[in-house]
Image (cartoon, helix red, strand yellow):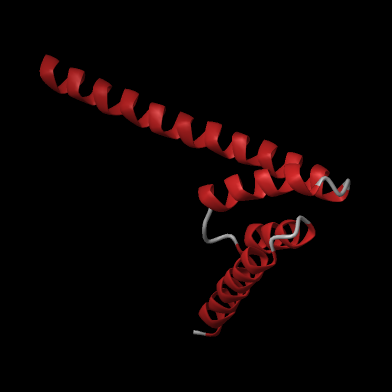
Length: 102
């Protein structure tokens, strides 16, 4: 009986750590989005680019982050990279729309 209790306690502690990490990650992402949007709004392309690069790495399936990164790249002179990011955004958006049709 004692072993079951210890095992259950370990599982619960592990789960709370995982869920706590998810909540912290979500909060970090919210802060990054806020920082990225503020920099973008203020035409601070370098700062916005840095934030959107991190966001696209954290959430590679988010079309909006790729689109915003593409705009930042375009405004900082990285034309080829901008095209690639904008195409990625379009592809992700198109895939989501196709998934809705199914």
